[in-house]
Amino acid sequence: MSAVVLGAGAWGTTLAWLLARGGQPVRLWSSSEAKRATLRAERKSPAAPVELPDSVEIVDTLADAAQAELLLFAVLPRHVRSLCRELAPHLWPSQQAVHAAKGFAPCGNPVSTVIDQETLLLRIGALGGPVVPDEIWAGQGSAAVVASRYSSVIDAVTDRLASEQMRVYGNRDLAGVEIAGAVRTPIAIAAGMLRGLGLGHAVNAVLLTRGIAEAGRLCEALGADQRTVSGLSGIGDWMLTVADEGDPLVQAGQRLARGGELAHDEAASRVATLVELAEREGVEMPITEGVAAILGGRPAAEVLQDLMTRKARPEFQ
Image 1 (tube, rainbow, N blue to C red):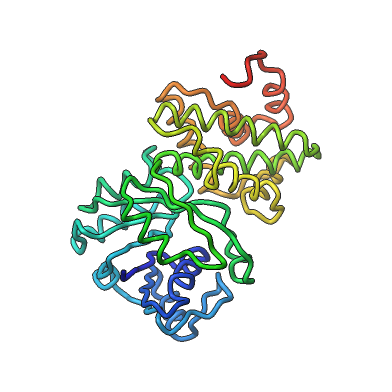
Image 2: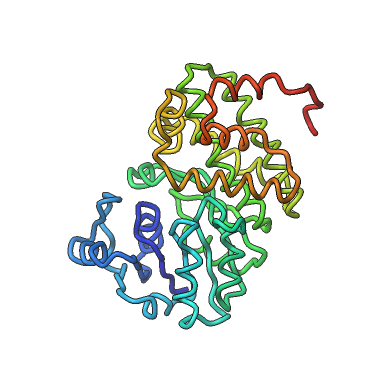
């Protein structure tokens, strides 16, 4: 199955490299003309130290990019709608699309919904899990999950990505995988704040388990399976993030805890979107709301105290 990766950042370049390792043809597109020129001339990206195989073709136009059976979106959630509108005239319903965005669009919709709204594409999925480009480039193993309501999408991505280095699981709960990926942002920021406040490992364990609880409530409200949050796209990814001192979101949380600025507009937007969605659906998400309050100016220690002294309740409620 022919494939194209839309977006040539660290993750997009890594996906193109993984898809092409067996000599399979892959197209790679970037909105940056300068980045396309560098990739074409040097076969490397500043964001990824690996050399792209000859089977990776750098394309300049979306019309050329769209000439593939499988489209993989590796762009930020806020860019997906405009990209889809430009792509739409070149697409046909039989194509399949998978996105790797860990967040909801600014309107509060999952990225898969945005793709569905703006194009004729019917078979859509999401890719998630604890995948670290640096470790992939170093030859280390990992695992990912591809979610879709269509088994053909799961099979297509599994066939192209699975290898001795990358194990790929399937999941029919598309909404659950997207929710788990979206909640990663407040979890990561909160983990950084706990680190910045000098708190121990026990509080991190509380953060992760209660994160599962609030993400599960959002899953229930949106018709997803709560169990998905306990899989690779949820707790699997979150555990990796919490332990990674170099994660940009964790570092942003540390700055906040020490009285600095978040300096991560994308993260702030994603947290605000989740809070608005939770309010709209009547879902209680105290960790996400606490992170939002800190972004709004409340001291991190004060918000943590409020969370720790909330009214007692049954654990599984």
